[in-house]
Length: 167
Image (cartoon, rainbow, N blue to C red; front, side, top):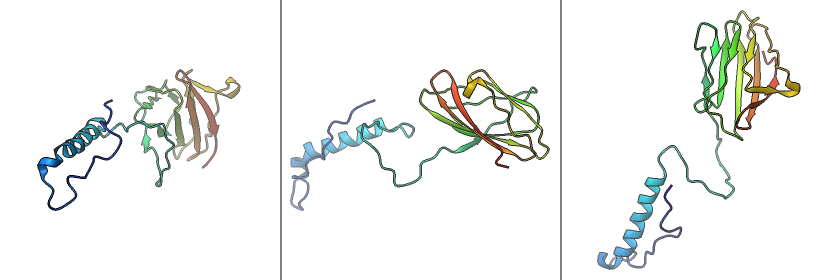
């Protein structure tokens, strides 16, 4: 990632009065253009410039809720964590949550599992998902029930907590 030519404002001594000559301001104008070009090069619309300073957000920050659909006749759900950090699935049959793709160590992921209007569906987890006491949780099977899973990645596994029966 490129670095900014300067972290201070460009001098405006030669450009702040009506009778200043552009020729005298060339260095200042070039500094400003270099700074703008560096910002454009650094900020690609996807990645923000990293900072070691604490940030104070004045507006809500969130990940959009994505719906994951089963990808095959075995009712297997594929969870791409790169595009669905917060996701929901609605079970309409006994299902499997496959190993997630694109997990990042230290990241937090949330999965909302809903039963359809019939209910009675189960969800099995790939061995990538780890739960306390090494016991895979049993989801609520009541019609229209909602369970919530929160995971933290260690880079290899998703360490999960299960909250149940929000229906």
